[in-house]
Length: 285
Image 1 (cartoon, rainbow, N blue to C red):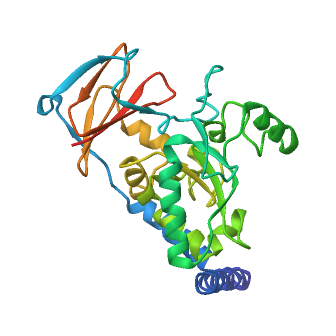
Image 2 (cartoon, rainbow, N blue to C red):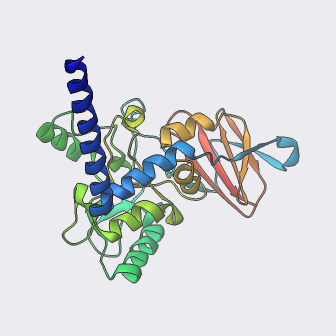
C-alpha cells in the first residue's frame, strides 16, 4: 500500500510539473501559444466548398490542347515525393522587382502585397532567403543535407518558383514564428493567396515538420479554404473530386481530367495543372 501511495504521489507531482511548464510556456512564449492555438483550431475546423450540380452552370467545352484565351498558370501543382515534376517541366520564372530573386510569375503581385502588409503593420522588411531552385541546385542541396532533410530533385516546390522561404531581421527559420511579423504571416498569408505549406501537427500527411517560414502560393479562394479548413494541400486535393463542381465565396472550382475541359462561364478563369494528370479550374462569378 505504501509503495502504491508513493507511485501515485510521484505521478501527481509529474502531472503538476507538466501543467506548470505548459502554462509557463503559454505565458512566456508567444510562438508556443500561437502554435498551440493553431493546433487546437485544426481540430474544430470544417471550412469546405459547397458541391453544386453542373446543371446550375453554363459550361463551355474546351480541348486541353487549346486553352488560348484563358489564364493558364502553375499555381495549383501538387509537388511532393509521390508527385514528382515531369522531366520536361519548365517553371514560369521571372525576376522580382530587379531584386535578383526569381519566383513564379503568378505570385509576384501577391508577394508584393504581403510584403507591404508586413512593412505597414510592423515596420519590418520581409526578406526571401530561398525561392526558385533549378533541378541541379536541388540536387546539390540534397547532397549537402541528405534526403532526410532535403527533398529529392523533382519533389521540391522550390523548383516551381511557387514556394518562398521568408524571414525578418533577426528571425529566420524556426525563429520566424517568434516575431510578430512571423505570426502575422502565418495567420494572414491566405489573404494574399499563400498558405503555410507544412503546418503544425501535419507531418503524418506532408512528411515534413512544421515550417512557419515556408509559404506557398495557391491563389484565391484556395488559400482561404486550405487555411481556414486547417488542411494541407494534399488533403485539399482529396476533397476536390475529378468532374465535380464546387462553389465558395463567389468562385466556382472544378477539377477535371481528360482531353476536354468543361469550363464554367464567368468573369475570370484561371486554369492550373494539378501535376497529377488533371487541371483545376477556378472561375470568378
